[in-house]
Length: 151
Image (tube, rainbow, N blue to C red):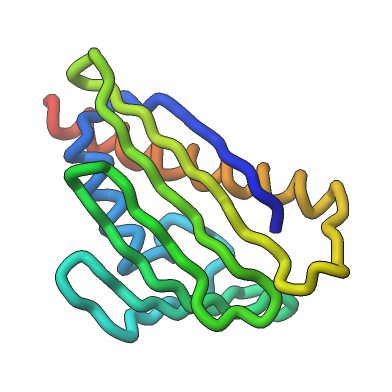
């Protein structure tokens, strides 16, 4: 996986997006279609150790150490014991000058462990597209929740 990032503005308060982001940690299949099974192996305060298996049998399962810090709006998903990659995915939620609008950014910072291997342009494009789809999905869910709260 390459290094890439994507950002969107969400018409929802920070607290709504933060809550949906925490829900995504424990129930990622609700937010990502390709997940077959997710299991929380350990949980302590604002830290989780999570295992994810994908529907596509060619994808390797992920074990992640997840740390959430509401005061900074940052959630870090760090890869643990992955056979091919090392790195992390960073989820950042920021308030804006508008009450009912926040900014949501995802950063994918994965590197191949084997420095002799290189990623194809297709793999890079797929990673960017997947990141954008994930952002748009949580945006839609947060905005639907915000509309319900405002009514």
